[in-house]
Length: 246
Ligand code: ADP
Image 1 (cartoon, protein in one colour):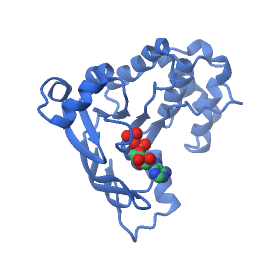
Image 2 (tube, protein in one colour):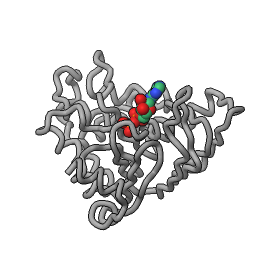
Image 3 (cartoon, protein in one colour):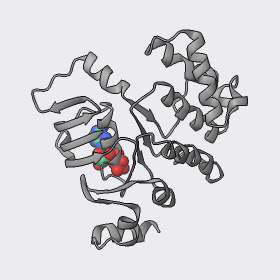
Image 4 (cartoon, protein in one colour):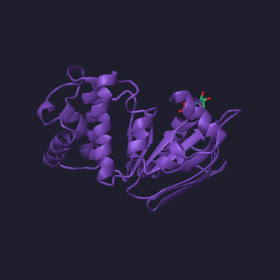
């Protein structure tokens, strides 16, 4: 479903991703953990081309792009790739002048060319799904952080992506609001949505992940099932990190 081969990303002289290889099967949830600065967000941003990799290959569904110095992507290629991915950001990024419902309708009309009626029907169903059926007409500033983030997830889902990407989706939230957002992501995992999640929530990673990926200093140090990584790892770097965050 998602195959990443020998992916490198340089920012000027700084090599941030140093040859990443990953396979994330369709329907599975992969959670990326690791210290700050290890390249987790950059990897996620490369997956939807918010950053253009310097070298390597990304395959997503039936699309494949090889990157090297001579790669010049057309905007059509970028749009087509981005349509396959839905990104949920740390800071929600909702349009402040649009209601929850309108936030979810907008992209469906502009990008997917749906009619207003179709888009609204889908938006209402998604608001129900994330537990906000009664908040459709509220503006972002009238919603809590957890509610805004759930609208953010519904908005990403509305674009019918092949994979959902989450960049620390709960790190801007007050602790008591984290659970409601994680529940939505867990429900999506149960429904076999393909998801890639960068998070600092280790308990959540343990519960939701089919695959845990531990990154440090631009490389994947170790990947495996939650029990392989959290209970049975022998890797010193993984152990050191887990001891620090425990
Ligand atoms: P993580 O998500 O694991 O905290 P990041 O992917 O955000 O790590 O960052 C990895 C490294 O790349 C850091 O050293 C960071 O400063 C650097 N970096 C990230 N984005 C940029 C950028 N746009 N320009 C230059 N350096 C960047």
